[in-house]
Length: 272
Ligand code: ADP
Ligand code: MG
Image (cartoon, rainbow, N blue to C red; front, side):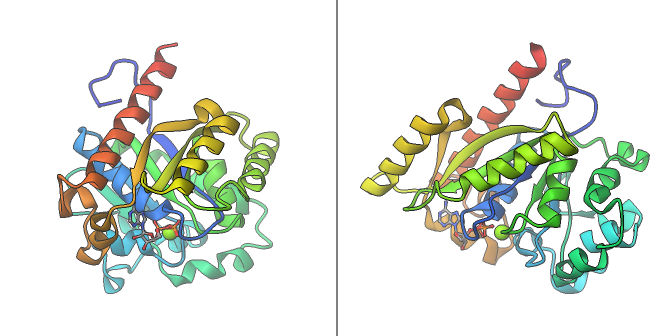
């Protein structure tokens, strides 16, 4: 879905990267898929919706530069030009997060629109001037109000699944939340796909998880698997996506393949 594609729908495609388990590769996938989509010529916004702010750190936004954050966007109605910060990559920006965001749940408890704040923020007319192709939302490791905001704002949910024992446990809870969001607030919410992360082809357990996932979830599972690759885990400490840190690494190539698979799936859907 590059900018020249005539079948491209109006407005950005919004994808929530979610899984209530921590450490499964949500942030890594949000950052590197964003970078791979950017490399294809797309304009991409990353929304850091995790109070840990790992996506912000991984994209080189230091704490002192996070004056305005997703907290300000959601709770204080801050203007977009204050919260959207350009990254090193042309056409790719981020709305960063800080630990402030962890109190949003409680502060918003009496706000009737609390589940729709991100939806409304991303659809305000002032957003049009940025002409994003994709918005990727990096969710916190929980099915809380923030994740629900992401699912209501999004067109689809992309689920990283770590290739380890118990990986599929918890997925039914996540799917239940998706179903609830569909029934109440966002009937068109799709599952973008499930991506196997930290895959180790020499490990029987990885292969077993892949088999189970493909048997149970079929086409929902992306063909592309993200291998366990030390360059992927090193990149954030250099404040870069792995595509910049080590462009030819297996991890970088895998995220490029994921971006290609995702854009071609979306092109097919739009053409239908
Ligand atoms: P989450 O956002 O779901 O909590 P992260 O993306 O932060 O998960 O990943 C958890 C840890 O695993 C991080 O230290 C990250 O660098 C590492 N990691 C993620 N994907 C890979 C990979 N493909 N290869 C090696 N390490 C990875
Ligand atoms: Mg994370």
